[in-house]
Image (cartoon, rainbow, N blue to C red):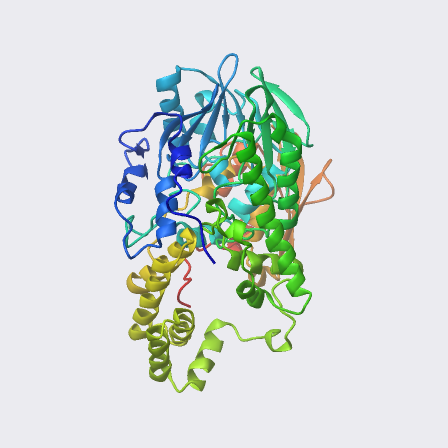
Length: 603
């Protein structure tokens, strides 16, 4: 089926439209001089597409690499190409409202400085988080005046804090490790490495923060006036994030689509891991946005990619995005109700010609293949109904048996090479993978699998598929390279006490704690809150209590900052202790530290 036309230059014109200035050099460092963002590393994209990169992905990466300060419409500016996401600045009566302050404080501060260099030293008068993913709130402290969380109102969709913490702390270690594969963070930037993610070039490596919102948006149609700027909100929970919202600026005739409509097919389930999104309601919210806002909109922009101008163009763009998610949802359900499994359906679905021919519907970040499997998973779960798949061996044990059945490692690798030579890289990868998991020290198997991954990555149109394959190849050849973990630590300061206790419970090693029974009361003097924590049967539970409720092994009287100091192993000065302090030591003794560098491509 024919794809979109490469001679169509509309996206390039829109990506460059309204540029006021570029950051030169496009490099951001932290206070210690460490580079946290280097957009200039993608200068190679100015050249012709090499054979090692899919031409469609090369085109998308060139568009995502366009950077600088852009005027979207009168009084609305965007800084693009200084992080994975965009930062939008809406000029008000006294200052500027910032929408989505990038991933890290350093890049957010650099984006604000670029804006002020050309638009004057306007103070930040409010902050808006469109949704609960870190690339839309992590840089908050870089733009909040004097770093004071109470200095300006911060608006976010209802449920924002719960979901931001659940993703970045509760499952943050595992998602972060897989995120290294997804973003290609350790790959060299170039034609033989990462060329971007399709959604943006990369995430910055600066200081990630979480400043809790001060005002929740709880309903569609809710209107807030901030610094003289009237904003009408549309809640879109369950779309690209569990807590997300679009917003309309009627006086500017501008519509912010958050991350619900960008210039690619998005993820229904991102390969780094997340809650499965609802493609059905995603399509419905896009349709609702057309109904609510299209008549009063001349420009639509998002927190990634470039804007779309013109009412007819906006309606066409949003309508095709709507149909994209609706089609994938409905066709997956149609086929699963005929008895097909997710893996089978992923091979059966082709997009309609009009969608296949639209650049913004291409699978640069999401893909038809893994989105169909995600929709299947949402409705049917991990099990496909075949009893043979109900209780399968784990990967290593299964791999050993497969290799044995195929006549040993040498015979299996010979078969893998034959499939690779015939162009069936997918099955070649499966065979080599079995040998690697059966015998992880087999250098020939690791090398063979790495070569197949390399070829699969070079042919991928999807940016994160490319990064997954090439990172797998790199780790098979060079081993696992530790990466700094900054998200969980930076986000912790914005967590509630209950969320901190939940994160502690996740770390309890159940079998080690089977025979432990203890109760700890926590009394917070700065809030007046009391919490009772109980460890029994390997489970750490907690609840808020109105008053002391019977004897406890230990009572700690402290402030919320004192709690953070305590769990970090810092000073316990100012914490009053009553009872058996050994109870706390016993609790800490059964808590595991997460492993941020666990193997993925090897057992």
